[in-house]
Length: 290
Length: 122
Image (tube, rainbow over the protein chains, first blue to last red):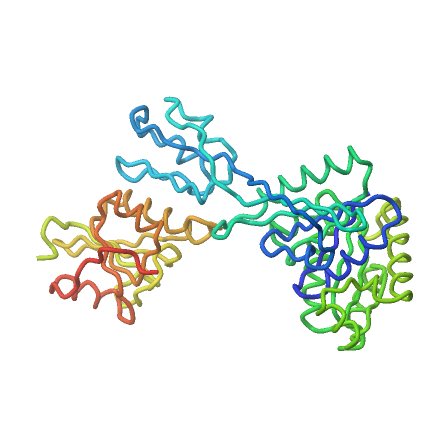
């Protein structure tokens, strides 16, 4: 099974929950950081001898000699990666989503396949044998979903071949990267905090992910900080509140040293073990809020 | 001297009339006032088709200006990709035109008080 740990608002504790779940997972597990714009799960799980492999996207290259300036490619492209300006065909490879449509529709065979580097896929393993997979977007690269797709492909391959579950640390928000990160999940954990921002973005995340028809539950981090409107929202929408992590200086200090919360003490180990088994049964259940 | 061989100019505009303010944005401008320099005939080109794009608004806007047969663009600032597109179509660009009405911009252009930019503003 695959668990995605997501949130609308950033900085709510996705990585705290992801790392803690991976650390107490009963069956073989793969820890996956899909927040490729700023991966940080490795700071807590600390995989060793991480190897990085560059990943590319196929983008068009123009053979000026063959081009008849018919403009079919540029009218096909929905992303303005090719523009016919007067008699000049201009390519903007950084805008390309890699669909290959322009190459396909060109009647002259004037467009060939080039490459744009998206970033790296990184892979390593922790001291206690948890494999860690993540993507790291190239600085200057504007699109994360293409790199995420490659990391997800690798994730599914490892999960199938090695019979592993996966815990995904998703990027924040509700736009393409966040939606892309939860596609493979059997269950989604939404981490939030009891503040107005936390509630606002939880609502957005719930609305965005609901259409996927996957079971969802909420973890409230920094509980006790604000009010009980997050609780009320979850109750109204029949979203189970799976766990509350108190707003505590001890936890913050442990986190700041790079500690994994489920390894801090026995109580948290047990809480996260309970969360893990709850998620397992949710993954097999029918969706009530779809 | 700016106006030789120029027959048609475009000014990024917040609305369809010369009293409307210059829109300092290029790709995401509300629209363009197109002016025939000789006859002073004006028409408005809505830029909504570019505004709704998630990306490439500047490139789309540049394509629209090529179709409209414009030789000169007056605007606040042009981004690097739109600049590449405009240069490919040999459209001349005056940047830094803002805080004035479209009518004032046209008058200043005709008086020769603008100079063409040779690079996009970042």
